[in-house]
Image (cartoon, rainbow, N blue to C red; front, top):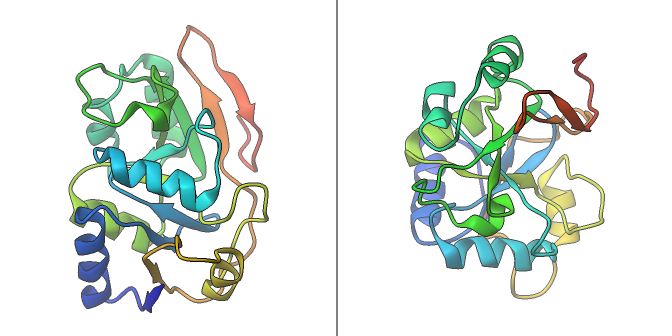
Length: 198
């Protein structure tokens, strides 16, 4: 497991690893997240294996902007209202996934996709430089606590199959996970309640 600072050189190294099908842990506005290329089936399967995460437990996608998210999902007025009120921020919006999205369907349950836009500068720089959506899921082993430092990530991931790189932004302030809402139908369903007032 390689650990580097989120400098321009460190971000470039992370981009290279993502393009090669690897996984990268990085800071977000809530906790450390784990990124991979969502267009790469092997990369997504490897991320699930590293996290020991059940295959039917989807992860969300990190986008650089609302406009980018619209290219991959069936956007609607409710999503538009929520996005403009709360994004970038600790909110995940679940929307129908476009069939021609090109994203590996395991990460979305097949038909829907969770949308995240993070205000954290490292997360934003990573997805902008990569140029397409990357996974956004907590950088922890399934069932274990969220991680807020590189030391906690190293402590949780053991054996040969571990994240390839950590972009070390130091110890993060402990915050609640993002709020998750579904706007697949004509109403807002709260899937997970975070700190946001919705």
